Length: 181
Image (cartoon, rainbow, N blue to C red; front, side, top):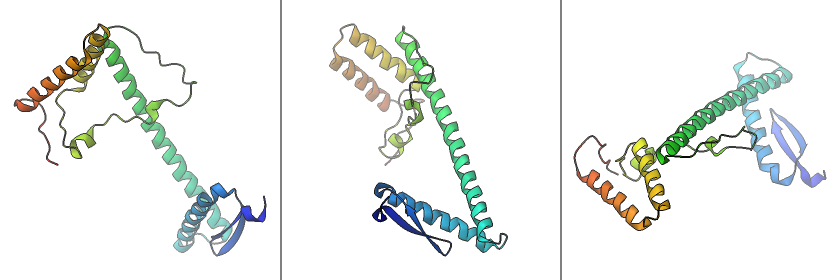
């Protein structure tokens, strides 16, 4: 790399000139600041003496943090996959035919790693309240698709669902109360 592709970072009172592509400069500088902070924390504790030992302890602490975060992410991804599987199976059962093919996992990242089945913000931010249970919502959605596939008018189907929603919103009962925004 040329001299213009190097970055000087300051870590624990020393400057280091590091070869770095221009598009990675900001990340390298952030990493160096983070490492410097961790090393200063360890040095100021007084329990570790010597720059080499401080560096090793900082590396161990940062590695531990990384592994802990990866494990937490894997647990969240696994839980999300289970939720998506449950929802797919519920949708197939409600639709009345078809099957879920989960594949062998080799097809690449699955959207369940990013999908979170949480409607909390619709209630807290937008003020919407749930009128149907998840099961009823999935059943109604699949019934809508079956009816549409059978030739029913999409507008009429939507109007019927909206009418039912408004009736449920107006009637007292076990549904959850609308939150104020």
